Length: 150
Image (tube, rainbow, N blue to C red):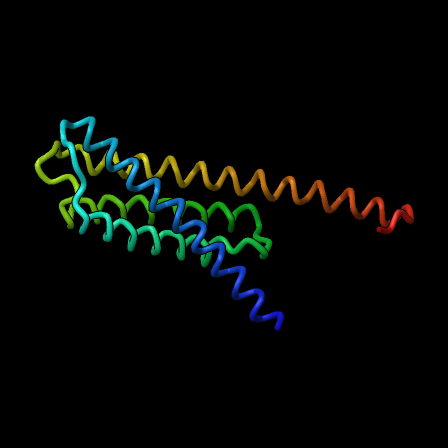
């Protein structure tokens, strides 16, 4: 049962991140399109963005597994690999699938820059969450040591 629970939580986290990245891709693609004079996104491009969001989210949960402790160096390496991969995949997909077709040649690169910024913001948020968990666990441990068991 524990393995099922771990897999279930892992899947929920992957879908949560996928939703965030899909919403970000759609919003940022719309923003870049509007900045360059465009006025719409194609449905096929939205489906491609959904697939990219799934890949980015799966890469995140595989590379940056939340329940595992990494050294600072390993976490930095894994984080950099994930950010670079997500950014590169975004630019490649935007170019290959013509997400910004008819717009400026700078548009896919701006979308990639936005993706890199978003991934870094996600990493910062995950760090804040881990720090808060650590503080909470330390408080609980102190209370346990003092005999304040709940």
